[in-house]
Amino acid sequence: MGLLSRQTRARSFNIFNVIFRPAKSIKGEVSVPGDKSISHRAVMLGSIAEGITRIENFAGSDDCNSTITCMQAMGVEIDVDDTNVVVHGVGPNGLEPPTAPLDCGNSGTTMRLLAGILAGQEFESVVTGDESLQSRPMRRIIEPLAQMGVAIDSADGRAPITIRGRPPLTPIHYEMPVSSAQVKSCVLLAGLFADGETSVSEFVSTRDHTERMLAWFGVNVLERSEDARTTISLQGPAKLNARDIVVPGDVSSAAFLLVGAACLPGSTLTLHSVGLNPTRRAIIDLLLGLGSDLKVIDEQNNCNEPSGTIIIGGGLPAPARTVVIRGEKTARLIDEIPILAVLGTQLEHGLEVRDAGELRVKESDRISSVVTNLKSMGAEVTEFDDGFAVKTSKLAGATIDSFGDHRVAMAFAVAVLLAEGESEIVD
Ligand code: S3P
Image 1 (tube, rainbow, N blue to C red):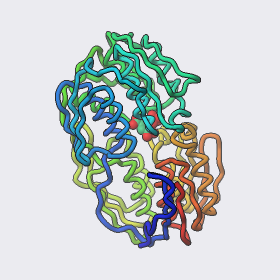
Image 2 (image 1 turned 180 degrees about the horizontal axis):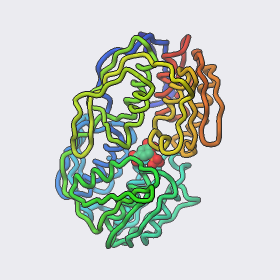
Image 3 (image 1 turned 120 degrees about the vertical axis):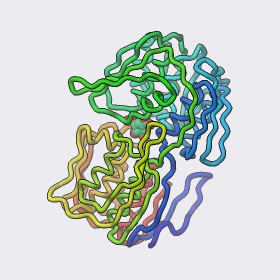
């Protein structure tokens, strides 16, 4: 198997290029890192809970570390020992005013969820981030928070954002104009500091980790479905009781390995304790629907989050027609689209993604990043405003640009295994 072979041209501390050679199969047993979305929430909710929260299998990525440093900057004691994190909760009103802008790095989840918590504080704070995060749309959280009575300013709806909370906040009912778990979570977290019922309605059910974890911490979160939409509500002001959390493996990280294994015929791969939350497992269901040799065993439930072991064998039966991902399916697969683009090159009738305009405002413009790199590898691909169509293609080794986007880098780390010839992934 020809996986990562050597590292070249170190350009700075954490920016480097990697050479890859093609592979015949992926074999083995691994545990993917803890779920990023759940790890962020565990630190934030643990910080405003009463008591100590012990987190196991924390995702030690830069993004989740940004959440830790932001909470520490507001006086929360957080001990980190590898993937074990202990958060000494200060309660809903115990955060201290930060002495400098809170740096969310590259992490949209940190910024958007944290804004909901900051909205409920008596002090003024500023959230900011790296160049990519400063270019991402924040009006989607500024508008509902302003409706809740928060004084919130930004230039042009982008970070840095100044937030002056005025608790108790005004409870609102918010109809989500975009399908976004980060926006939903921001409003619900602000709702913890409101005086009365805050509710959020969504037409497409986005990931529900915030709701599940709030319930785990003792908050009464209600959910009702009517007229094709789901409404989530909670009563403020609310208190959270600290509880330990075991973070399942990140199904969005597993996705890269699952697709790699499925596309390389001799593969057999076992992935332990992967999160199987119904709002996140669409990639598994898609691979099953394509007839891939995949099974889920040892299903469990920890801290309101289901998980299980996935065993996958190589080889994909040819689907009869183009695989089309649109509407709710796109929302459910939003972080998996880059790797699905790679999968599309291996399907007899290719794959088309629509309704994915949100991908243009992720860590990079993911539609353009994916299309550019697929073209460099010789794939036949058409770009649309809201997606792309990729035909079955033979991939050739190429120089790939990550565009500074972790999911693009990982998707193409799989694509280059399927290619003919050596490739280099830059940055
Ligand atoms: C996330 C929600 C999604 C997802 C991101 C993590 C979360 O973003 O793409 O990687 O943890 O809530 P949006 O809410 O912008 O869709």
